[in-house]
View 1: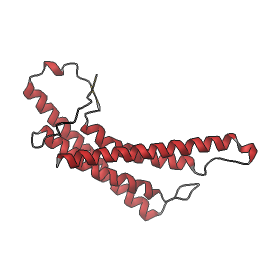
View 2: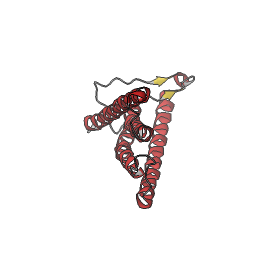
View 3: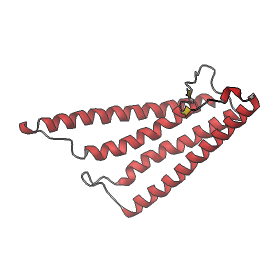
View 4: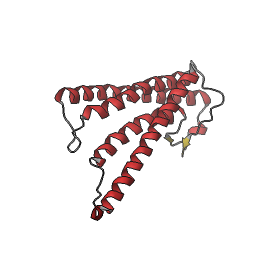
Length: 172
């Protein structure tokens, strides 16, 4: 199961990376189009709307992998002075808190998705339904719930990470 969870999180991160690459290419094309407006070219219509939605999708795709790799910033001034049992307890509590926050975020996003779907709001230039961006983020958020739960299970000793994984650790 751990290989599946880690593969899922890694795959989400790759999707987020591909979204960012596509946004970057589109932004470059749009900027070049603006610069060449005297030659009849122009910006990509709705580029900022696409960047807004795409960036949100990318962030939701990156967060589960970052969490599994322990890539969040950690201030560990006193961490090494704590006894091992306290370190395990604090780690489990922080994992529980992160899981709770992610579930809360997912729940509120589902509420926002439903609201935007029902009211039919669209973006200004492309007239793209706003709920589309929420729906894409929701897929990543739901998969992230599984990942954050798995990280909690790892901290409680109920699951083990794959042996070949090297954690980055974001300590400062």
